[in-house]
Length: 188
Image (tube, rainbow, N blue to C red; front, side, top):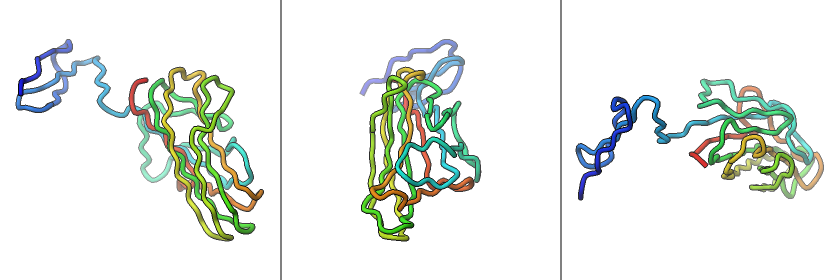
């Protein structure tokens, strides 16, 4: 096995990353971009219960309890529409916790909707759960979104069920019950 050639990114001082054989290193100098890790992680949740069939347009907050530790600039939200802080490939996770309070629910649904033109939304990911009266269910879904323009590529979340107002999706100001997690995986 041959060793990698040594290429220095000016200036030559910085962090050393060992790649394989003893002596194989990469020098990342001051001002150089390393692209070796996740640069954005942000988590949001709804603070009040949600019922009916609709996009979640209100009661969103950034998680702020129990030593929450986001990374980067973070998402912005307005009337349930989330805007990304920078371009890149993002993983979006959505978790919905619900209870069927008014009788059984044949299905409860959670959607992640993407737009690439700041107006036309398409369901990128959908999850379902069925539930008997007064029983709890959790839905967990994710999508990968190539955000090439932060002014047009946005995301929103929708909840629903087949029988109006029989399921209540839980919100809380201290626990993430129905929540979204945004992770920037890398460059577009």
